[in-house]
Image 1 (cartoon, rainbow, N blue to C red):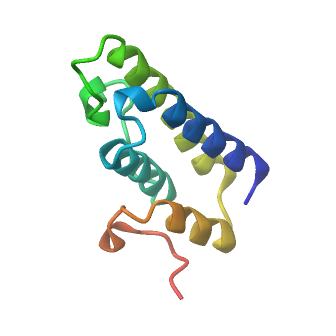
Image 2 (cartoon, rainbow, N blue to C red):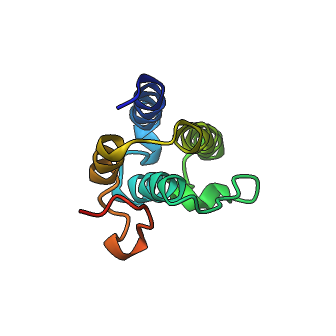
Length: 114
């Protein structure tokens, strides 16, 4: 995988670990992360400006959860832009699909189907 994409993936994963007390490593935020990857690969628009903090489904009863959501959104947007800009090759696409396994198989619109 291209190093810039891997770097942005790693930063996102590190943020999930950092904000784990808010539930950032739970299945719901991870599923949103998978949607970001899927939309980037499929060239589907994703408007991060209107993405509500609640999209990450963090523990809203914990003080600071909105800051955690903003950090996840900001990094997800970076990842989305990098994936789209880098135009992943077949191997990259397969690897990203494996990472984003929660994104529905019927939702993939890339031309790399075997």
